[in-house]
Length: 386
Image (cartoon, rainbow, N blue to C red; front, side, top):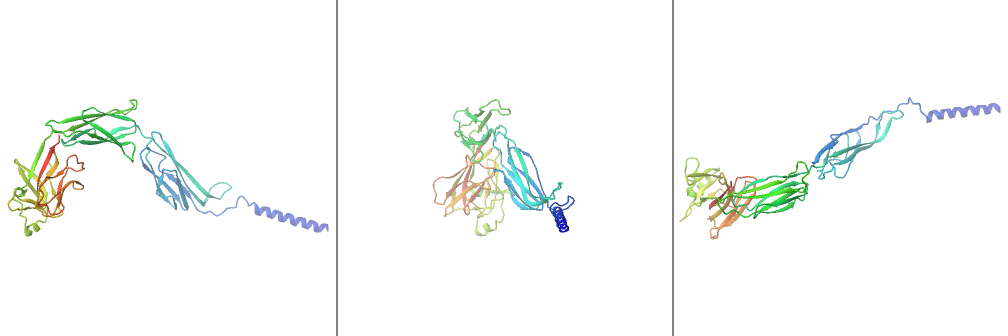
C-alpha cells in the first residue's frame, strides 16, 4: 500500500511539471513573423495662413484608416497598402495661429522588435500641423485709375482684415462698400461720379484710413481717379464703297451671290478719314444699295474686327441702317463676351445705339457681329483716355 501511494505521488508530480512547461514556454521560443509593416510620414508640421496641401505618405502592406479634424479634407480616408494622401488645409482667416490633428491606424497584426513580444494587433500614428495666423492687411488692387470722360463709376478691390473708413475728398465723388460672400476680408469699393462733359480732365481723390495707426506695415491708402477730358472721335462707316483693301488700295468686291460666295477668308481692309487709314479685319464685301450709299456685308457667322486707336477707347457704335427686311441683332464683343447690342431692320427709323461706356473687359479688342449677314451702315465713336 505504501509503495502504491508513493507511485501515485510521483506520477502526479510528473504531470504537474509537464503542465508547467506547457503553460510557460521558454523565452527562446520564436513565433513565426507576419512580415506586416505600417509606417507614415507627413510632408510638413507647419503651414502658412494660406490654404495649402499636406501630403501623408503611408508605407504599409495592410489595410488602414485615416481620421482628420474638422476642416481638413483628405482625398482618401482608407485603403490597403502604400498610399500618398493629399490633405487640403483651409485658409486661416484669423490673426491667431491654430493647429490641426489627424491619425492613421490599422487593426492588423504587425511585427515588433520588443523583448517578450512577437507581434502586436493594431497601431495608430498621430500627426499635428500648426498653421500661422494672417498678418494685418490693408491693400488695394489699383490706386491710380485712368478712365474715359464717359465713365461714371469705378470699382476697387480692397483686401483688409482690420477696420477702416473711407473719406471721399472730392466733390461729387461717392463710395459704397460690398463684402465678398466667400471672403470676409475682400471688399469691393464702388466709386460713383458724373461723366466729364468738359474739355479739361477731372481728378477725384479718396482715402482709405485704418482705424489703428500702430500696426506695422499698415498705412492710409490714397485712391486717385483720373477722368479724361471730353475728347470724341467719330469714324464714319456709312458708305462701304469707301472701304479699301490694305493690299493694293482696291475697293471691296461687290456683293453678289457668286462673288460673295468666293470670299473664303478674312483679310485686312481700311477706311480713310482725315488722311489717316483706320484698319479693319474680316471676311467682307460691299453690298450696293439702290439709290443710296453701300452697306458693309460679311459672311454669315463671322465678325468684323474694329479699329483700335491709341489714346482712345470705343464708346459707342451707332447702327444707322440695316438693309435686311428681317430683324437683325448687332453686337459688339471683345472676342469672348458680348459687351452690348441693339436691334435693327430696314424699316427702323429711330436711333439704334450700342452703348459701351463704362463696360469692363479683359481685352482691348472689339468686334462687330450680327445674328445674320450684316448689310449694315454704322458710325464708331471713340472717347479719349489720358
